Length: 419
Picture 1 (spheres, rainbow, N blue to C red):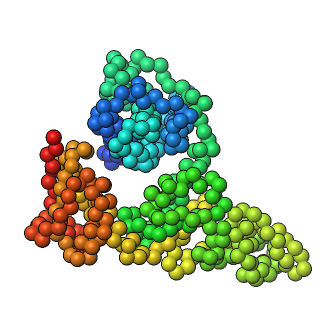
Picture 2 (spheres, one colour):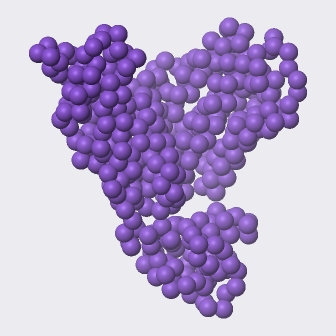
Picture 3 (cartoon, rainbow, N blue to C red):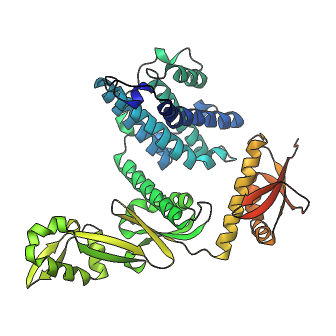
């Protein structure tokens, strides 16, 4: 807490809210990640010695985490060498919360849940194990007790404090992959903001997300990830965003006021006559030419102020000159699937409340209005697979109410005893 809040040489008054922030951003996600790993490793009877998948055969997201971890090791060592504990603790907190817990573990839950111990499952186990083990050593000087607990439980050895401090393995650094993943995360974050603005829940599927075609080469291999994170059926790389958005292009007066002088008015008029192709070029950081009083001038993106507004049926967002557009028209099939996903969420929460084991099979009884019943019936198999339900039974006598997107639904679950 102390080095997280401020540099160690700065006077500090204790603040309980700061302590809560450290717990929520570091200790809680670290322990949740560790407990998640242990839970499924024990269920699967994992021996990490038998999961040693070579680096070259691991999935791209595993290589990304190892690159981020080794960058962390490099930066933490630099921070210690500079005697800057505030920098060290901030780096560790960001990695644990944002990269490890909220992205890697959350993104790979299905790989842990997989029924077959294939190379993908072995890879996610060994990658998580290596990073948790490395983290226990990295954090040892600052959080000696939790690091000791994690290290001993992972290795069976006497103490983390007998270990050599980690150093960066430069062979595992992959800046290109980190840049690619950062772009994906930025687009996903923007897409989720679009959903919030449109008041559309993440569990409600949408038909498509449209991404600027300039990013197709970089992102095409990560389309499944984008589809899952944004809950869209298709990802389309659009070469002409003007088909989905209205652009308003005006002069950036701070930049062009001094250089163009009296010609600013002509420049304003010229911008209103730009073609969609010229606007797209500006958006892609390409220069265009315009005529001002029989003089050709070169226009770059810094010289203009570009505003966007999505056309009917679409919502658009932009971050660092990267656009993403969501088709927000919801068909009946998409609406029913959204209801089914909300139903699954309710059942999963009941499983947690009832303290079911992750592998326990259940039966589900429910009572609801015809609209929700139609959705549940339509996605019967999907619901069973996601909740480990053997039976899904409509029973008008069930009385255990929940709110499902404004509809009352009554749900009851029972664990099935299996030999």
